[in-house]
Image (cartoon, rainbow, N blue to C red; front, side):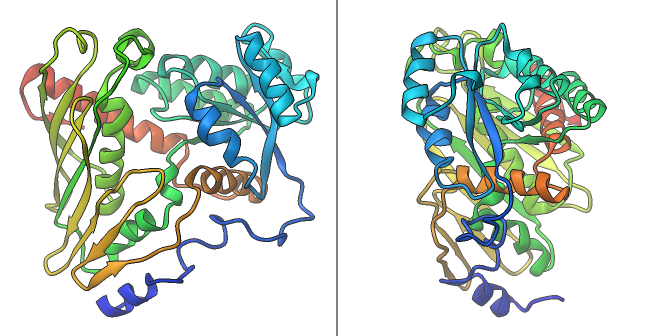
Length: 360
């Protein structure tokens, strides 16, 4: 059923749960009799420590059952803090023994980008479902191999696209369809990165710079708001600090063309703040600013402000993925989605290198 513009806005108004329930909030015991799935976090860096582990205290369909780390001190600290049994603690060398652990159903790969490929495949061979942080891999070839390994093992593969569970971004996914089709998109995400020695600035570990870390959000925004895949890209790279960004990209702008005429213009940077997502149709517009934060997203349209309840994106994402496994249902954030983004990223880097428009 097609909504009118006013019906669309009112449906998305304050207090609405249309875009949130049932998969994306805690459901107060509705599924209390179902077995929660056990997750082992592999890589206990900042994101696992500050976001994922605390969020697993709020989930309804999964829980923190194990950890994988190369640092014994971290293992002891996490064991005490989260009451993790000794038998559920692994390092990178004995990781494959996780295959024998029935209390771990899922491995969440939260490692530097270049390590995703190895550990997704090892987890699949161990018979575990896999959540993998974005970018899924550092090349299209890697992503294809990861998808193949999971299919061969009969396990599910999901990519950590947390915004697929956020109500503001779910509204963006609906907006074009409800308003006659998107014609133009602007998406930009950037910040000033700190420590010049961190792994994100090492190409061997990160595979790229701002583009693979932040630009992927802008790519996603354009793709899911248009509801189609880009056919051509044109990209330009800029550097202001050649020493700090000697191995990876500092800032990139790019334009994408979609079938039927929609176009997008995007920007990402490791040296300047940017955080906006704008869509227009022939008659209407939709904007999120800030657009890509963990919390505090704000949105409006030509008919007024959007006001959704704030959610824990990480908890919602992990619950959604776990529910897809429990129900054996389809997801819009699976390995195939991760592969599509890498196809765009490779085309963007090729355009930067050649100075030409590149077919995706």
